[in-house]
Amino acid sequence: MIALSTFVLLFLFTGSLLIPVKAIVTSLLSLSATFGALVYVFQEGHLRWLVGDFTPTGTLETTLPVLVFCIAFGLSMDYEVFLLSRITEAHRTGATTTEAVAQGLQRTGGLITAAAAILVTVFLALAASNLTALKVIGVGLTLAVVLDATIVRGLLVPAIMRLAGEANWWAPAPLRRLYNRLGLTD
Image 1 (cartoon, helix red, strand yellow):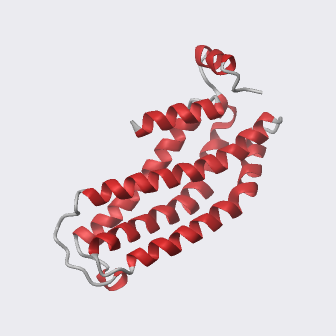
Image 2 (cartoon, one colour):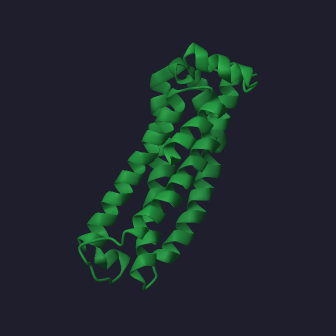
């Protein structure tokens, strides 16, 4: 349901089918890496010297990954919308996809970095807790934000968009007509 609503909203925002799919897939990649790290650290008990003492139980409490997913996916989409808004704006004013991506990165890089730094500071405070549940949430969200703000938004998204070129903005004729009929295009 989250993926479907994200897809629809990003389509309405960009008029593209590829961009929403890319956004969801790249967010899921960073979340997968985050969950892998949580399993490695908290389920299997590795790196206790780094995150603080806790008792590994061989499992993660089932509510914690759900909570981490919801928060991290929402933050990931915030970063995506910041970046896409500037890329889409530049593309609609006549820039090529390559130029639009460069302009979008230039205009949002500082904002995304500053937001990520603030969030990482807050989440590291949670990770320093003596309660394992807060430690899991803090470590998980810290990893998710760092991965998303650096590797995903700074490298992966621009690379994918540049490789896809003008195909980023494609939609089948019926959806394009709907998009235009709704008055969502310039």
